Image (tube, rainbow, N blue to C red; front, top):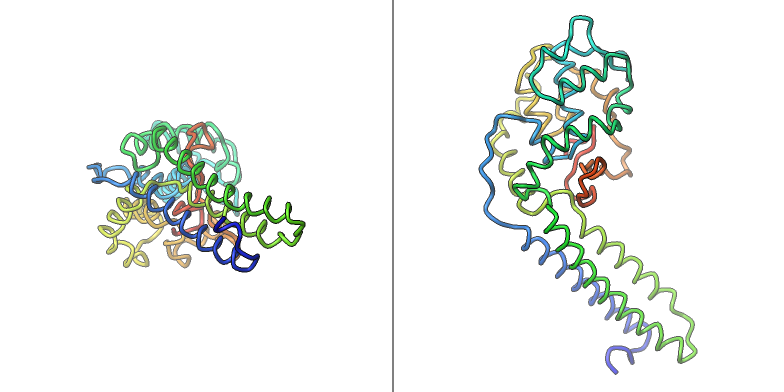
Length: 290
């Protein structure tokens, strides 16, 4: 019965086309289900957009950078500590207050980016708002993603598995290429399932970045110690890598760029209880200007 009676090479070609069609359909349907008119959010808090770009860890990174720029935190190598005159009462946002309390004792930047209590604050104050506006997937969208993934896996594994059984029952054991293709297809399907933002979130972030493109272009004019909100908006939307290293030499030490071959995974609020989809698709890590 077609296509299972096709000879090995012909079936491999068929399966490659079939897998491409299934994954493409999965991607298109998921994107369509997560699209819609963008919400109307006030452009008052850059930390909200840092969260949209890269999740809870990006909120912590950008807030830490802002406190350093205001002189409330001091940097020595990769160690950060609170300035003697700095007190939580001097700042307004909860994440900033928590950071000043956290850095009462010196700590490395890697530790603060893994601190569950700080990530939980960022998640509660920012990522939950993004979920309510469906810029990152809410529980309903996550269920839809899971259902679409199961349908794609059933098709990919079902067709490949039936051909395996047919080949093995006929005494043919040269099925390594088919198994490899099935594994690759399943891997890609999982990757397509789990971007951090929804399609609406991607388009909304792109539109806000476009609004601030002028700021990105004049990033070299930003100077340290100014306490400028421009610094917060620049790093929130484009990442700390957008800052000129000549003016901010401590940035590469605190947030080194990932190795060339490494993926720049997004950080997500799910690490602190959000249940969000993975970290792919547009999330930014600390030194990434994604």
